[in-house]
Image 1 (cartoon, one colour):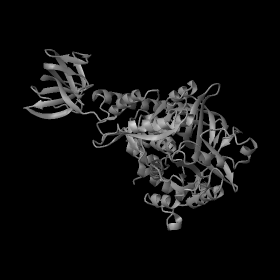
Image 2 (spheres, rainbow, N blue to C red; image 1 turned 90 degrees about the horizontal axis):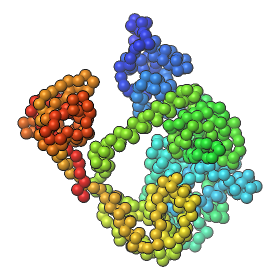
Image 3 (cartoon, rainbow, N blue to C red; image 1 turned 60 degrees about the vertical axis):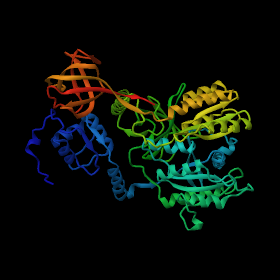
Image 4 (cartoon, helix red, strand yellow; image 1 turned 180 degrees about the vertical axis):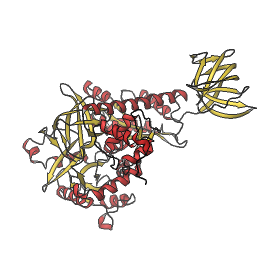
Length: 601
């Protein structure tokens, strides 16, 4: 690489403009490399970085935060390549070994409903002396930390599937170890397999807990055989997966589980860098009266202190308070420690990444830009849906079977059997009904949380429902349908199933226009001056260009004008100007055809 200064660079001014619109982040790029990529002088780029409060020179590399701020400053889209991320992590692991310190493992407990997850969590909580002193009452903040043999372990206290699917959908990976709970008297269930798939997709190590070993009907061998088919071969059979037998209710085998978690943590060598800027993941968040937005978070790197300014998703703020899972006030939080913080301007989303920034001015700019990008994506999606007549199923597999997940709560066991039989007969090759949970009794908060996790319809049959639960369901965006009559339920479910069936669309021609003249306008490009010969031409509709009876273009009308005015449509006998997406080679006598997709089934 030629490191000699370009004479042109010495004459750099603040009026330089970058020559590209995007940059693929590379942690190995120096300021000089970046300047070459952006087609600007070294001096111009260094000035911009100095204005952001970062001291640098042409031979230094820039971290993610600085690059992101630079992107906002220069209106430059920053692209993060997965391969670069992987290389960066490997490179940093080698260079910064001296800065890494051990951190507590973060554990999520997963498994089939009613296999003992909640009981296991309660038993683990009670290992804390402070819980025993207060009768086992703890503050539920989405996660909690225990100390065992002078080692700390963090447990995520939320529905396991939500912890994986919701977090992974936002690119977050905070769980180190998954504890898969299987009841020995019930065996492997569909949700057990789903838990395994979630954990494997997140590349998380699994410990299998065979729970309720005090029961008579022990299916241990069957469980181990079945899970072996999914890659969980037991250590005693020559595999790598630990299997722990226990009774969560009687706390039998609990010490074995905690010791295995610590052993696996040591083998994985889970570490963190306390010298880095604080960053991590939002577990959950809420708006509390008199307190404002509160967020439960876990750090992955650095130390978070009161007074620090953070950006979390599309919001930001200065940390006013930090509390642990026992509501004890803290001055700072360290990696793997679950804490609740206040001070954010708005409520962030679960799974949002947060990071420390220099000041509130920088944080506001970053949050505003993220909000702007989110709105642009939303409007683009709405525009696309309108253009294609809400054909949101267009990219789905034609042969894919749709599923309606249902959680059923009834007054009697007989009602459960009757409803399952009636609704089960409504499944077809295209759509099927999947009962996530069925039980006798009133709807509970756990039912609503489960429905949210599985995006399920919650059916309440012939049992009372209080207003507080209804409000909680509304806030959780969970639909609860209450019935006293079976046939009415079947009518509604039939409608819900029809909504899941992939619609069939066909293209319907709306109108044709003949190109009479071609114009060029510098602000928008080539415009076809047309005369509508039949039907109606619509703006934002599908379009074809026909020349000599052959279709030479298929795309979209992106602008429709009459004189200088934008119009939504032009009817037969009227003149209009048409601009097409990615097409400008019009010829006189071309035919432009406007069409839309209509649902036929």
